[in-house]
Image 1 (tube, rainbow, N blue to C red):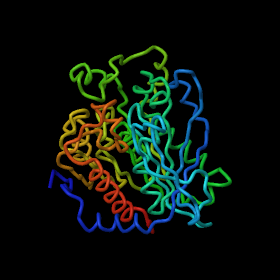
Image 2: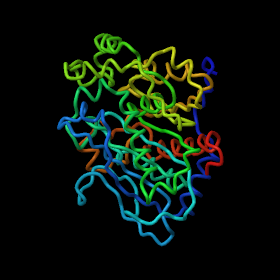
Image 3: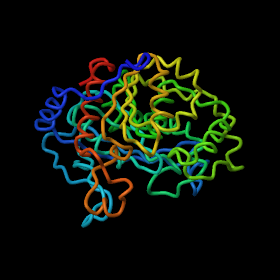
Length: 354
């Protein structure tokens, strides 16, 4: 035991066998896109847009034809995400459990597709977003980093848009909603699950002044007059009442959370960390959250770093992004363990989940 935290160093072999069986016998996965609005996006987006891009993965009909999904030039992709059937019909008329998915700083919904597609293949409807001012396609802004709690508002708006969509809404069971995220997305998942931002963001500024090389403290510019008014909302609750469980991978920004609020989280939380994460210190982030949250489960993967949790790197990706695509442990094994752990966790915590 680690304090009150259940520590597991390996995901059970039986889970991995089950995951392989599910993949071999699973139905196709569909991918569709929507655009909605989020009022706080204008403060974070470099072009002052209020738009929020939403990606949804879901079980599709058996006759749907999947196509490879990649990031980068089609003839020389940088990352292999998986395969999906674009805009395919839903598999049936029934409602399914929902997972909200948040990417890390500078990432995207698609960079987390390896996880989202796998969970959709297991029977979930997965709703992911490209966080404004904080994704790989748009200009990244300081405001997006300092107003990180508004990422949870992105998930709230995406869920509402999906629920009100005439095609997607009938397939969502809002009585079974979980959240997952990586890095800054892990912070987002914790906020959605009940943790509260520190009411004094200057504490985070002070932390970064003392720890400038910590991955959660980049970029270096930490303040801007344009976000002063929004910072007053830091201490407000941004919990999503629908969220019943949170699966958190290599979380960052934990020092931006009110420590007392972590002690008060009652939503089931599972935190997965790599013990070789040199980019976002587990000791100053994930381990703090795991120790503080009552009943949290901590999964530690040996030889795993921070970027092991992004989409599969290709040879071109390894050449272009050596800082992201150099691994001590096989990346595919890390992904399999994360997917198996998430499926087991949500099966326990979301009533009647797959």
